[in-house]
Amino acid sequence: MKHRYLPMTEQDQKEMLSAIGVSKVDELFSDIPESVRFQGEYNIKQAKSEPALLKELTKLAGRNADLKSYSSFLGAGVYDHYAPIIVDHVIARSEFYTAYTPYQPEISQGELQAIFEFQTMITELTGMDVANSSMYDGGTALAEAAMLSAGQTRRKKILLSTTVHPEARDVVKTYAKGQHVEVIEVPYKDGVTDVAALKELITDEVAGVIVQYPNFFGRIEPLKEIEEIVHSVKSMFIVSSNPLALGALTPPGQLGADIVTGDAQPFGIPSSFGGPHCGYFAVTNKLVRKVPGRLVGQTVDENGKRGFVLTLQAREQHIRRDKATSNICSNQALNALAASVAMTALGKKGVKEMAVQNIQKAHYAKQVLKQKGFEVVFDGPSFNEFVVKLPASYQETNDRLFEQGIIGGYDLGSSYPELQNHMLVAVTELRTKEEIDAFANELGDHHE
Image (cartoon, rainbow, N blue to C red):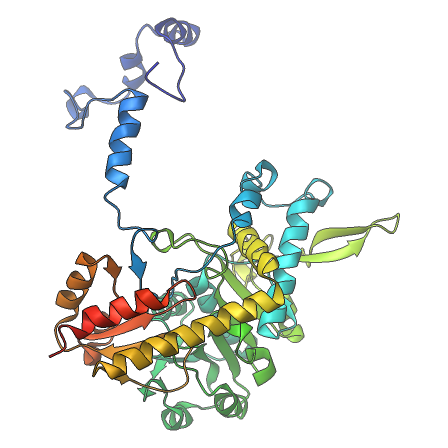
């Protein structure tokens, strides 16, 4: 048998064609004129048997530079973190793995409870009142936050810090174009949002101000200072945040944020070539009815037993679509479950310890590179990423590192022309002292 999922014999095919009254497969295409039909063979390889195909694909997969055989210093929004083994075990269970949207609470209690736990943990990390059941990824969650602020304030301008992830900024601008919202970028100074420039740009026409915490350069933004400027004109304060960093940093909710979004990828979700991941979206109580996506609530049944339901369901996403603040009504349930299992397995102390290890190891890497004579640009309080100025071209440096089994950092010149040949280096808790030293030595050997 050549086909794993199509166990159809020639006899089966004859019977099927006979049942619908045709003699051969070609007759099924009789509506397509002969002149435009493709005649001949496609220029593709002949089908192989299953064992031969598996052998070929395994060989091709072996050419991948994966995170098991290479040490990675690449972050920029997708990170190589420890994922407890139990994560894969739980999400591979059939009742979770194949679950669809839990419209019927009476048969979806496990799925609904898992989402409820996710929401609860996100609110604890962010210091916010309410979180939704998750979104596609951090970029779309941030864009939804920008549009929510425009709808809530009835204003048409968004101030967006240039220290926000470049791809996330593009997504915000794409959403804004459709809603006729103007996006103005706030420049950076010394690796953080330029507060003086923000003061000049802020007016009572601004719906929301967006900053990232830690920002794209790994630096910690002065949220309290920014919050006072934003709220002085009754604008909304939107913070995009790495949830793992919140294990060690003061939550944005405690610093006056109105909306906190981000990507849950650091918790139990593999890099997977950049997706799929899982966005989170958390707000203050007063915005609960404006939250895109869905919310799971806890209640009791008629016997007083705890149960879970989708709450605030008479929502524009489902009915009056023309009046909707958002038409997102799906969520990344399986990835949200992975994040929930990872956070549960780590526990409060574990999340904090993991966050602190990121800070300490990144700090150690910084010190070693400085000793080698490298300039750490935008030096100051940071989480697990920092910027290094390279003596040679980024491409040349990265190719050389790759030959030594090291995946180098992100090319900042590709997003910030003024930072040509600067590398954004990420150091997570998985990087060992030996790996950090090898990375520094390999860079340092070519420093002169």
